[in-house]
Length: 342
Image (cartoon, rainbow, N blue to C red; front, side):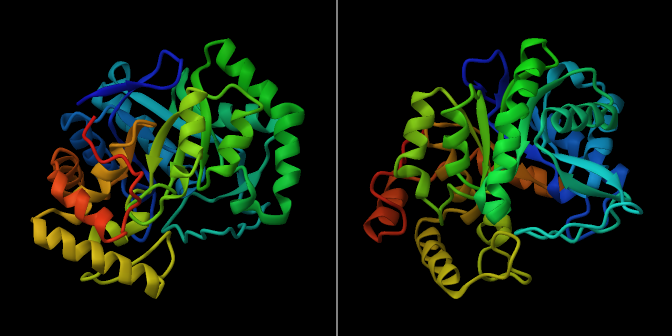
């Protein structure tokens, strides 16, 4: 599988990565055996980037991922990313927080996440993640969910924490070799641009903002990030489900919520073009995002081996140019969207 460099760092990641949200207890109970099977299948399929976060199962994803990598003996061949900005504390002392994308994890570890973007908070979060992962260094460290979309009125508080000490912590971790690349892990592009103008970022994992349904980064964000040499890791390319399952399945979700009618209508229009050209909706969703030159990798989640195999097969297929032309003719995707295979 093709590898791409993150910004000006020495980190290279596979063009398809594995996200661990579905393996941390999202909608169904997670087991270590199943987790290792998925990681093993992903590795055998050519995937070399594995993304996690303290938030995912409140520590479960990191603990399981680190163990799987060690048991499979693949550490030297893979890139691991995790996130800071949250510090996990025992549930007996800290109540669970609500957020814009509330995920009711099934059987998570008995912790709650508390936001902390200070120098001490980032260092504590990083060291805790090292212990859960069992790794002496972490390849890519992402600041998780800083910005107004997630924090609303409290966004300025956390942004000031980052400016007052968080940047210093990130710089120290990268300059000492504890991490090799620094970025953001967010559901918006405004915060990425804000931080990139203040701090030297290598990359940013942007979830759900550039998809067949969402095109806002085309206006200017991706162009500026390219100019600043900030690579994009695209997550949420299925918008949490609707672009993987289509409208004909049960339990449809869009950004972890119920699907609004305008979104359903747009997906039906995409499905119709897919049917006309014999293109899989999931394959189109992956390829569309991956064709943008700002995107270094597409992170795909999977709950089982079958989904890994389906994702890799979809990522390996290419729709005819006429398919993309038709989506543009119908106004489903913008004329400015890159639709040529890299």
